[in-house]
Figure 1: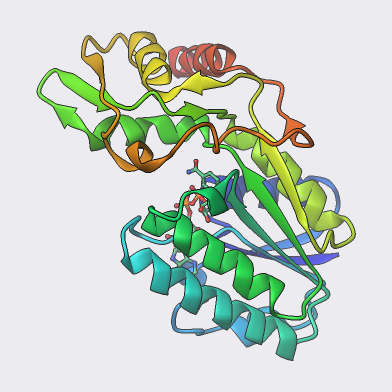
Figure 2 (figure 1 turned 180 degrees about the vertical axis):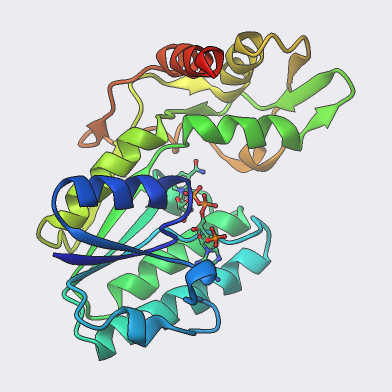
Length: 252
Ligand SMILES: NC(=O)c1ccc[n+]([C@@H]2O[C@H](COP(=O)([O-])OP(=O)(O)OC[C@H]3O[C@@H](n4cnc5c(N)ncnc54)[C@H](OP(=O)(O)O)[C@@H]3O)[C@@H](O)[C@H]2O)c1
């Protein structure tokens, strides 16, 4: 199948392109660097010609209020172009529990992205994933105060981007779900504990202070970011992921 991957140069997108190619598909990465812009719409119609499936793995440059317009505009441009070109399946990557945190602009933006897709009339699939293990680096950089990092004890169920990419590639190559599949990690961690494990693995001596109001995840109530009962559960644990990362760094 010919599969267009918007954001095919990003963390998830580049892995999805590679996996689809390994399975014999003609996967085409699309991003501003090759003339396709989901915000201006530039290059979309041309890029969707003869395409069977479109996978949208783009991301907004910010997590604030501006992300709401970003996802509304980008998704509207995508579904309109896909409709004009007769694309048979559209796939997006969203977040486990995304509709349970209306206080967060970025989550509102992702809910809007899902709604634009559902309302588009295109056959569709939504993959909702837990937080990427790789995302911990950014989370730890947001709420630094000297030698401490402030994090709430929000329960999360993170997983490796590689396992999310596998699920997205499999869904893209399959029949449209016209619904949602969730994928999350094998373990639930309070976010502050996850931060402590990540810092220790890097030999980082900063301490994590448990702070219920800190950062983006301070707005999350209860365990809404953990997987629903029917979710796909990934295999690799956070400690296995960290060990694999330090082995590969040592080899370089
Ligand atoms: N972080 C998490 O824990 C988490 C959890 C669940 C779901 N997600 C979702 O996963 C998705 C992918 O995230 P990611 O971390 O893989 O993203 P990423 O690495 O930041 O990659 C973003 C991609 O979007 C492309 N892009 C940016 N602006 C664009 C534009 N105007 N037009 C076309 N392409 C554009 C980028 O192209 P360039 O390379 O040219 O910049 C890049 O290929 C996001 O939608 C996010 O909401 C994230």
